[in-house]
Image (cartoon, rainbow, N blue to C red; front, side):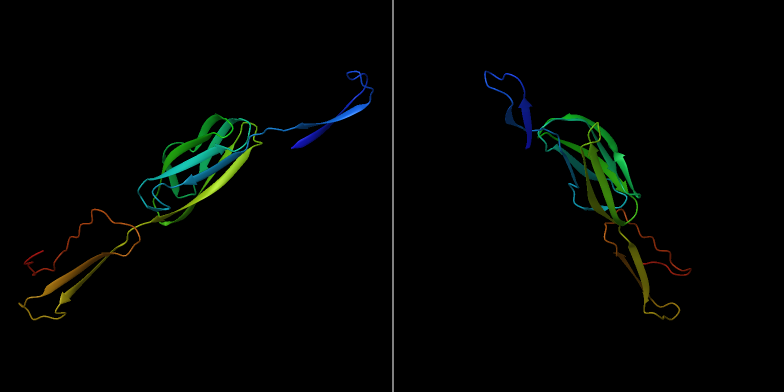
Length: 188
């Protein structure tokens, strides 16, 4: 709370001057807050779009005019649905706005997404970051022959082990095995 001292000169309702009064004035002003979350979790699969929610609040006691939200993903992340710059207009005191985006990244790693808001004059600002980790599957195939050595014409068995050694899922995996010349598969 700010205090202002007013001094009047001359007649003041029949009282002699100078007379001073302390008047209290509450200055109202907007204040912005921004936070972001990933509704599906802070780990996403590389190559697959994922959702992001951004909440902007006017925590002040006066309207914030001409509010602009900017989302700046790290290199390696791309906005595939929504806009990186959004004009939110005027936010009344206490008002909250939720914006949604979809992003995608093609490589594994930890990325930081920075969001910021400002009013039209640039005097009221807020910034926040939201880290996300992208994971990917990693296909590993090993093949061995049992027995390791065989006589010509004897039966051998090929054992193929397919595994995902990555942290993300793999989809639509198809393994095709080529057999050496002279070997006829009995079953697959």
